Structure formats: C-alpha cells, structure tokens
Length: 599
Image (cartoon, rainbow, N blue to C red; front, side, top):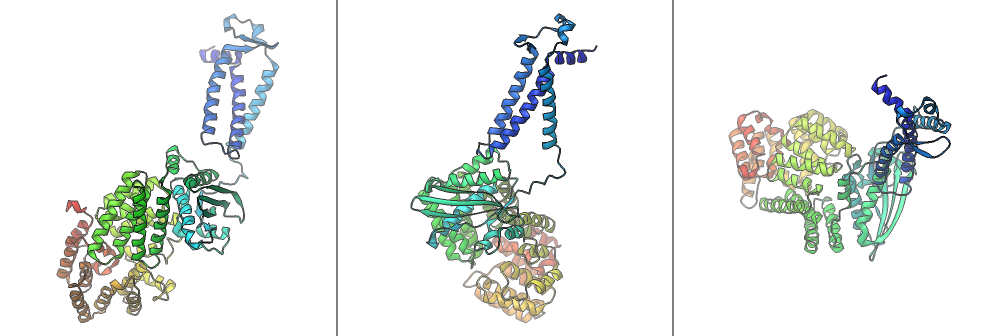
C-alpha cells in the first residue's frame, strides 16, 4: 500500500473525513442563515466576512482535534492511538451516529450546491444595478426652501456616483420629471433604469425630515423599502451617507472600504457655510436658463461667503471654480475671460489640495486645462482621475466628449458618445447636441441637413447655441441658403447667440459668392474692434470662406498668439476643411494644444 493510500486510510480511521463533511455542512447552513438575517437586522458590512473568517478558523481547529481525539461509541473522548497499536477488531468498531451524521451532511452539502451554485433553469437574472434619483419634493410652504431639498438629493446622488458597479443617471436627465405626471414605471422605461429613488424633504428650525423610497421601476408600486429620517439639521451628512449606502446594499452593490470612507467623509462642520454653498448651487443652476452672467456672479458670492466661514470647504472652492470658468465661457470680453479662467484654476486647484478625493474638482479643472491652458494631456489625466473617483459622474463624461470634439478625433468621439449613452439615455438621439457634434466632426453635412428637416422644422424656436452653430454650417456647406438665413435670424434675435451674428452673416455672404457684402462685414468688424474685442478667429473663419489663405493664416496666428479660447471651435466651421491637410494649418492645430508654459 502506498503512502497516499495509507494516509487516506488513517484519515478515515481517525474519522477526520467525517468531521470535515459534517463541519462543511454546518458551515454552509450557518453562512446561509447569516446572509438571510444580515439585511433585515441591518448588520454591518463586516458581519459576513467575520463569519467566514471564524468558520475557517473553526475548520482548522476541528480538523486538528479530530486527528488527535476520538469519541468512543459507548461515550467519552479519548486520545486516538497510532495505527500500529490498534487491533483489527478495534479498528472496525465505529459509531452508527457518525455514519448517519456523515450521510445527512453529504446530502445537505449537495442540496446547497444545487440551490446556490448551479443555476436553476427557472431562476430570473438579477436586474442591472441602474438607478435614477428623481428631484426631491420640498415639504415646506416656502418655495424658496426648494434649494435645500435639491441639495440633499444632489448629495445622495454624489455618493452614488462613487460606487463603481452602479449605473446612475445624472441629475440633468431627471430634471424634467420634477413636476412629474408620469408613473414611476414610465419614467424607468424612458431612462432605461431598473430602480427609482424618490423622496421629500423639509427643514424647520434646526430639525430636518427626509422621506425616501426605493422602487423597482419596472413594476409600478413595487417598493423595495421606504424610510423616514427625523434628525438634527447638523446630522444631515450622516443621513445622506446612510441613504446612499442603503440603496447600494439593496441593489447588492459592493462598497469597498475606501469608497465607504469617502462616502462618510464630512464636507464641512459649519452648517451655515453648507447652507450658503447650497444657495450657490441653486444660483448656478438658474444661470443655465438664459445663460445669465448675473446668476453666475450671485453664485460666486454665495460660494465665497461659504469659504469665509470654512476655509477648508473643498466643495465651495469647486463650486466657485466652476462658476468662474462658465463665466469665462459666456463673456465676450477677452480680459474678463483671462481673469475668470485664472481664478477658476486657482480655486479648483485649492479644492483638490484640500480634498484629493474630490472627483468633481478634477472634472471641472479639466475644462480649464483644455480651454485655457491648452493642455489636452493634463485635461485627460484629470478626467481619468475624476472618473476613477466617481465612475458614475456623467459630467466627467460630458467634458471628455467635448475635449475629443475640440481635438477633432471622430473615432474617439464616437466611443465617448457610446459612454455618454450609459448615463444620458437620449445622448445618441439624432436631435441631441452630442449626436450632431459627432456628425459635424465626421463631416456628414448632408445627414445633418436631413436631421434638421425632420427634427428642427421651426429653426427660429427650437435651437440652442450648439445646434445653431452645427446646423448653420451644414446648411452653408450644402448650399441650403434659405435655411441658413433662418438660423441667422435666430442668432440675431437671441441674446446668447447675438455675438456671433456678424460672423455668421459674413460666412453666409461668402458662401453665396457675394464677396463684396462679406468684405463689408469685415470692415464693420474692423470698426468695432477699435472699441471692443473682436476675436481674430472670426477673421480667420471669414477669410477661409473667401479662400484668402494668407489673411486666414495671419488671423489664425494672431488668435494663437493671443491665446483665444475660441480657436478650439475650429471644427465647427467647414470653411477650414480645404486647408486642414496643409502643414501650416496642422502646425497651428498642434500649437493649439501645447501648454502655455511650453510656448
């Protein structure tokens, strides 16, 4: 008999195999019970891992003891004798109870494996862990308090952004359901999610009440859980953290210790500063209604007051940094642009120094790095960091999409659009900004015109700044001059687009072959430049449409030397397409993305 066979016989003689079998069955049962009671008893996350560790330790101890000791059939525990000292008769003596226990344990183990490891044919697949958080209702009679409910909802959403295996719809996509008339199941289908979190909030004096409900959106009124929190206002951060973690647990999502630590971190200990920060967020949101610089200025004032109360409030620095770069984007005054971008970068870098885990700050800083510093590599690195910290934050993916558009890489842009569709269900729709930008980058002008005919019949009412640029250029390229004229009228009448009116007008004249009228617009721009800033990039686009190559390159170089951020809009205008393969043009494009410190 070989040594392995002898060892196996010895394991059986000492009943080690039977002990292992019985122990394994008991361990399976204990684990099943532990997993069943963990959720209803709200046991901490370390409970199940601790049970597994204890069972492993117990397994080692049971195995060792079974090797050393034996239970006599007539009762009592004795030390097991070595094999050479045991007679054949003694070796054959065994307890029938051990046999019964072994058989039962074997059956239990097989049954648990069948139930838990081998998939059953009639088992349903676990639904995807996708969720939308609808705007919370304010229970206060004072509508001015809505910003508090919005702030609580955004904070919970911000925590969910950090959990990698969830798919979370951004707040921008759910805003239209604020005054909802649709059922939860209808909303879930439209947003392509399985779960919906909705709630209501009220703050009265120093108390706060939050009511939340998690529903399986595919089936109406299928509530998973609902809870009500009556806490001190100063405890609102722990409530927001608790709700986010409870949602993740209900969706069977795994939260790593590192992410859990970030979720539970306090943004500030100064509740007055937090209130001012939320007011700043509200003003910033309202600035998007009419691209209102006054609202942006108001948001900056709120954020600054919050910083004055808590100089280590990273989110307040992030908010003010975001408002400054958006102000730079909206203003037509070049000196203001420079100052706004400089301040934006200063505040965003401060936000990151105070909280290196502030993924939001990295995403916003990336905007400044590619718009102002012209450092595309640094911008990409910051976006990657933002996505690492908040893998479900749609804004980081939006910024990444725009960066690829500015760089003119249509292949990468298509991939970024696919990423966006995970978070913004309508991102790939033909009428969306993102899809139109992809077609623009691919130079598919005839398709753009077809989409305009189908989705934008009223060209004087249904446009926004991005769509107006894209469609105007497509109409020019396809010589649809009547439609281009309608867009031009919209630009003239619209406050936000009015600044582009003279540029568009000159481009239209040039494309129609009316060089004289185009030059008259250039003359008027020259007069205007004596009292206000006129972008050199505008001159370059007009000269490109007139095929005045030398003047175009001179204007492009002037724009480059002045570091005009509008230069990155070069992919909006097909007039440059005829020159893109020329070495002089490619050199200018290359320099557009060289960091300013390297010039």
